[in-house]
Length: 193
Image (cartoon, rainbow, N blue to C red; front, side):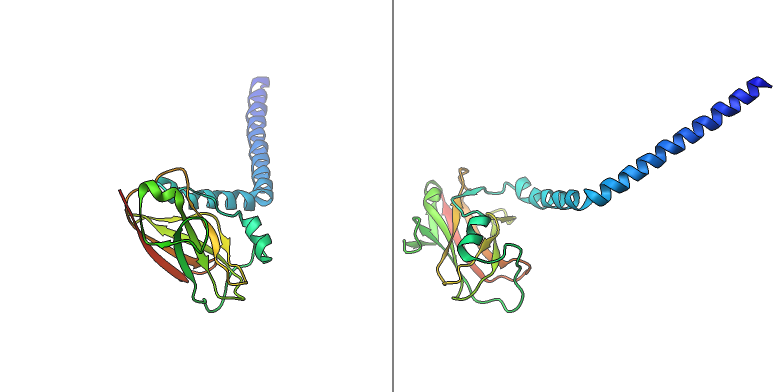
């Protein structure tokens, strides 16, 4: 009789112990999900969003302004997204670090470090935008961070290719306002051997 009582106590003690551990894990998952969930989800979505560019051989760039520098320059809220009619904008490349330098549409791979990307919006236009680069294999890569227009109408320096020499071929650069899928400006260029 004592043996049966001992077996029943052990059985039910083990069941309730497992149930307690399962309850504790559920409560902890809820707490982590509610407290850390939004940060984990946004971090994971940012990582997942950058994977296509990394896997397709995305092109690093350098020489661009940081978002905070750009925000200080234009005085707009960094969380502002564009809504409404998209103004006509201009995207162009120069051989040199000035918007007044020679504009180009063709250059050699060896010259890529001397080429700078520029975007100009009409005066009194304040919006954030992304630059989407279609590379020769037809993949799309975001070029640099999110930029902001200059409300004075001056061109914004959006940087240059980074340390990696880009492959030869046809490229298309699109300027897309943040929060939109429409293209505000586009330019095509060719990189030769």
